[in-house]
Every structure is written in structure tokens, then in C-alpha cells.
Length: 78
Image 1 (spheres, rainbow, N blue to C red):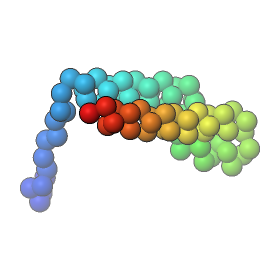
Image 2: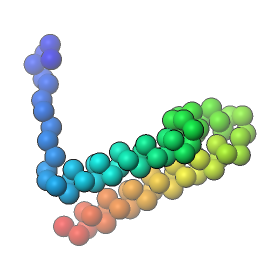
Image 3: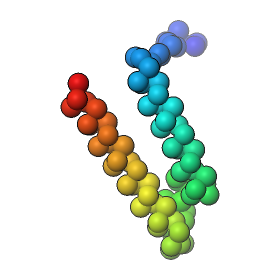
């Protein structure tokens, strides 16, 4: 704001709004299920060799890959 470079960013349409809202809900579900943030589960929990953290980290990686594949699929459809 000081450098006057602040700008508003809007969604491109209803589909983008719905996808971003769905992503936010899944991030909330993941954070609650993992009992904390991804950094806490992925780094701190793994350093203590926690089995549940390893499972949560595997879920984080699987979710990220699934999200990337879904985005790629959407781009190919257009």
C-alpha cells in the first residue's frame, strides 16, 4: 500500500470460486484430521519417527499430487 502496488484480484468465474472454496474446505479437513498444520506433521512429527505423522505426510503428498493432476485435467479440457 505504501508503494501503491496493491491490487484487487478477482475470480474468473463461478467455477474458479467453487474450486477455491472446495480447496479451502479440504485444507480445513486436512488440518483438523492431521491434528495440526502440514509443517508440524511433515517435519516435526517425522523427526520423532511418529507413525501417524508418516501417514499424514503420505496423505499430504497424495493430496498434492491429486490436486495437480486435477488441475492438469482441467487445463486439458479447455
